[in-house]
Length: 113
Length: 111
Image (cartoon, rainbow over all chains, first blue to last red; front, side):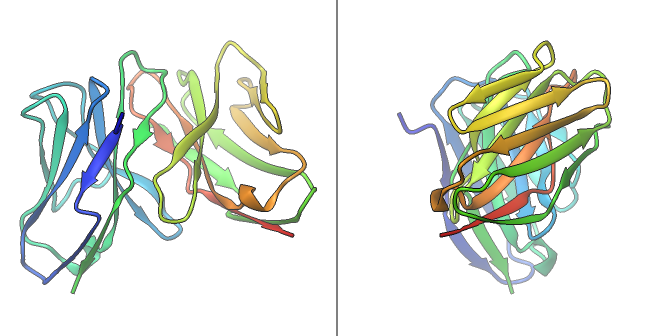
């Protein structure tokens, strides 16, 4: 039982490059989330999805896009990376209804130079 | 939207002491309050949670209390051990289904 798997684990990008972070979950969860974690800022929600084919903006969505074409996958895209996007990115998933545990992936450490 | 405040940001204790981390929330509709532990290089993992119809919950050395009137909840760790050293996050979830996290507390347990 893999749970939530993030790919890649580490990445270095040059300013202006693009990339996609992949999140896959095998728990048949409806809800999926992308967070970024920065020192002293906790976990800030970038985008989320409440089901296949749906996406919504979170607290800090600028500079990111997402897609949920399949229920088990949630992709986070950076079209033109900026140094301010240097962070650790976490994907999470949870089942419906609302008051249930969120399961997190291991994180992706992204550095933009 | 929901606002969750967490204190302290850093907590240093001696092994065997107790540790308390406190959180406040703003949305009176919030009804689920989980606590996550994040070890170095890993993703957060749920350690205990409490729902709004319960005032206190215990699991071995860990307990959580909830005061809905005052809109605050706390994590209590007794008999701390070096392996308890980690970052702890509180969270609140209400009708929007989206959890809001506190900024985290770095707990350091000195042997």
